[in-house]
Length: 252
Image (cartoon, rainbow, N blue to C red; front, side, top):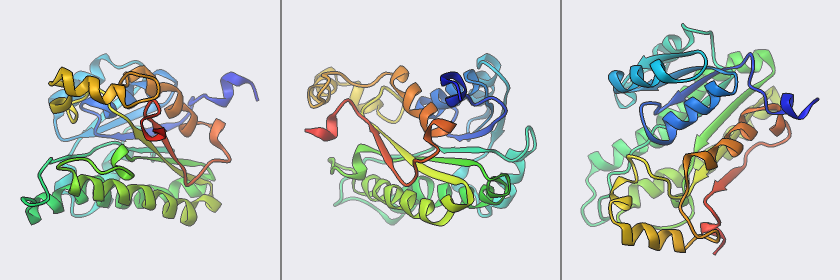
């Protein structure tokens, strides 16, 4: 296999949740640019349409409030309409309410775990049969620095992302023998809507950059290589792993 074929996504169908902004949108664009037919899923239809109108390659959108889903089977059927059932599922949608542990309410907790942990599992569960029938599939969950580190006002988010890390291993144990490989990306600090409060404070943003081994925060270009690796034949013997794309933040 040539180096180009090793990382090729030609002929693959991908679904990316959280595709209306941030790392989710960047992920959807990267996959489309590298040959996949991409279905972007998010709540904000206007933002999704704007992305699809300018994205490279073949794209489609499904506007859906993931938090409102009571049955992922219906959502999965909508996602499969444009190009067929996906070969690749990227669970990038997420929420961080940033509430101190003393003030967390059940609604904050439930919303965070539902969007960050529950929906990714049940959506994946819907797509695994078709992936397994083809003998090839990729599920990439979005973990976080908070999968392993505690941050201020991050108890519900950290709990959900710690769960994502272990869920990824459990998915791998359950599905890898059927050709469905399950891994996670754990981004460091990237400028997105979710991290807006951090990057709004230059002093805080620089302090975080100083905690990395490289000495800077992430850019969207830093996600290209790791993402293509986990979504392509290049990772055929990799499953149940969490790849930290954090400039060495967790190495210190």
